[in-house]
Amino acid sequence: VKLSELISAGWILKKRLSPTISNSSIEDLLGRVSATFGQGVKLLGAGAGGFVYSLDTEDSSRRGKIDFPEPFFSPQIDEIGARVISEI
Image 1 (cartoon, rainbow, N blue to C red):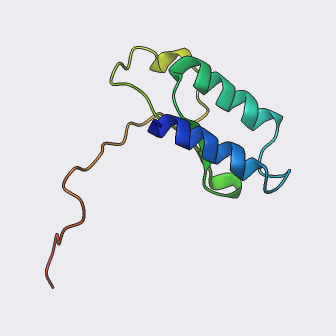
Image 2 (image 1 turned 60 degrees about the vertical axis):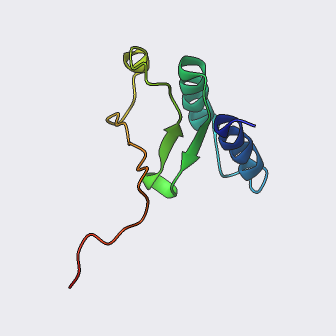
């Protein structure tokens, strides 16, 4: 099973918990993101502070094809994991 499939499946299951978790505007945005990137897509956060999470390949040429309401950023995966960065 791919991580993208698990992310999408998790979003589908979460929407079953309550009819107020999503709406037509959110589903439209998630549909456009999914159609463009073709990877796992879900909504994270709560209330007005939520954001769209989507996996993408390293090919960033598609990023300008959706008019995102907020800035687009690309988090990086930290392969080192948890570590002490300061000892007080």
